[in-house]
Length: 392
Image (cartoon, rainbow, N blue to C red; front, side):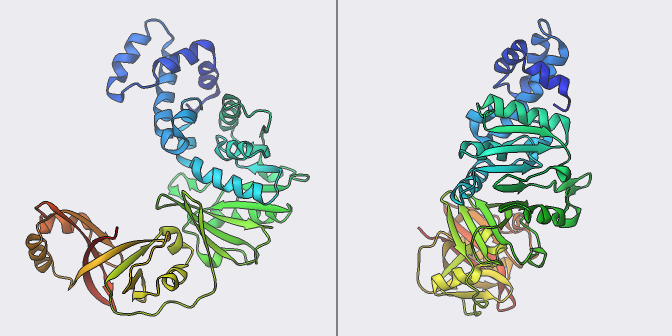
């Protein structure tokens, strides 16, 4: 759905009835369903309903079935919107900071505004695209939140945020050629968003998790957020009361947060019995040293974010493995070892290796009832294979 007419038609009684009728349509059956429905409904409306059904099915992963089944989406909206669990966490943190009203700039289809409103926060949601604004308005109405969310169509760079407790900015980080990595090429640029943040008592700026640390303003708290092990976003916070320059990794569900403590890089040490793979948010936030200290461990290599230790210790910030074998990189030796252990279920992980996991899996041809994990990495600079299994 990329036009206002399609959205309007889907919100009519006929359109809503069609959306209910095609809700669970299998993509393989779309043609037959469309042919049948076009006998009684306009072809354009049937196409719009089937397209929206596809988008709703895709959106379940981000918004859950209950909300996705009532909301409206555009292709870009599904792709670029915040996962509900992350938006809910961020809204909860805003609430804890005493925020009662937020100017949500670049609101998209309204995912963040919905989470803020559900936290009891009044929201001004602004976007410059007419279709996106109409979809956001339809979504807050569909979820019963119109009393807390006011949606405006405007250029966010001209919006007066005076009187709001906080500003939230989610700049567009995709262009015609895909993802944008330069923060000044965001729309609007990061420098403008930082300036807008400075005009509010508190602010949160959503940025790409791959942002270089040197691009982060000195007076911001930087937070990297992962959900079920997948890094979803980074946020620059202003006015939180935490010392400027602080860095945080937050893991969902939980939440569990790890704050920087200014530790030096961990020492490199021989591979012990246990290997720990830090969560991606921990790695992005450069907090591997904090995890290594918790585990009384060190690095297998100065440039590799694998922590090794002699004792098993529980931590939410890393996945633990017991290492049974350490081999120099040699496919034939690995193949022989796996055959001897009757390993047919092989998980291949890599860090600091140019070998692709699927390529290795094809070469060793695992067979048998047992399972194992192989790490392709470097140990003290040397290409190495570590074999083991998840702990617990």
